[in-house]
Each structure stands twice: as C-alpha cells, then as structure tokens.
Length: 170
Ligand SMILES: [Ca+2]
Ligand SMILES: [Ca+2]
Image 1 (cartoon, rainbow, N blue to C red):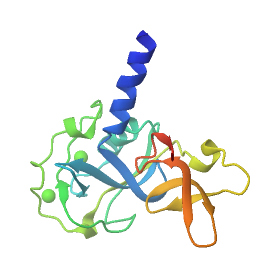
Image 2: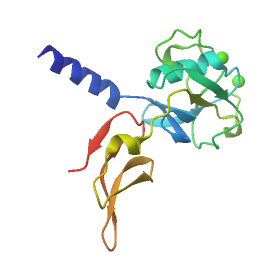
Image 3: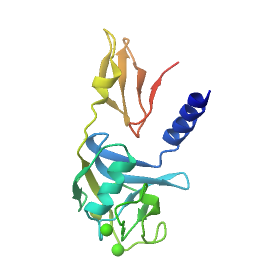
Image 4: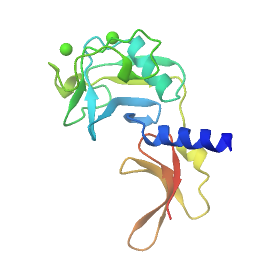
C-alpha cells in the first residue's frame, strides 16, 4: 500500500513536470523550456552557466551536466521567454527554485534561448520495445511506437513530451 501511494505521488510529479528539453535529439539534451500558467516558454542565456544547466539535468533525471548552451544552439523557441538572468547555486532540486527575473520579465530574444546537454542520454526507442510492424520515432513531439495503415499513422505507445512518463494508447 505504501508503495502504491509512493508510486502515485511519483506519477503525479512526472505528469506535472514543468520542464523539458526540446530539439536535442534526446530527452536529456535540448532547448530548455519551462511550463508556467499553462504555457511553455524558453529561458534566456544571460548568466546561463553550468550551475543552472546542472539543476535542469538533475531535475529531469538525466545525470550530470556536460554543457550549458547559449545563443539558441538548439534552435529558437517561440512565444514566451519565461526566465532570464538565472542564477542557481547548483543545489536546487528544480530550476523554479533558482534566482531569476520574475516570470516573463526579460531583455532577451529567442536568439538567446538557453540549452543543456546532460550526461545521460535516454533512447526512448530502446525503452519502448515496439512490436513487429511498428516503427519507433518522433512525431509531433512524442517519441513512440507507431503503426501505419494505408492512410494514417497511429501512435501505439510512447513517451510524453517530457520524455519521462511512458504511456499506452487505448
Ligand atoms: Ca547563472
Ligand atoms: Ca537579461
């Protein structure tokens, strides 16, 4: 029972994940995006360094940090720039707890979007075990097992955009 409760709490935490790495070819590297008020936005590279990037890697369960990237290394995001002048001490458990400008206050453009490369790379296709006739890949920000009928591509199972929780399509 205690285990079940723990599992539920863990799942809730994963579902509520509010940080992701985009466009890096792995769930453990890419442009940093944070979720705030229901909207995904990017992080500015002003003062972006290894301490900040390290907090992101830890938060995502991606091990130690290899590099903190700047100047939209993983391409430019769009819409909101939520964080600027991020100043983590390095021991925070989430980027949310680091010092920064208030959400949405910045003097940046998307050409300054911050990125991260973490040590652990997870290959969702290795973890998914697609069955015969399915193909594994990325489509619309979901890594998954897909199968084709003559008109459409169907998602069978996959990882959500955070790459942390695996799901099966009903
Ligand atoms: Ca910093
Ligand atoms: Ca700034």
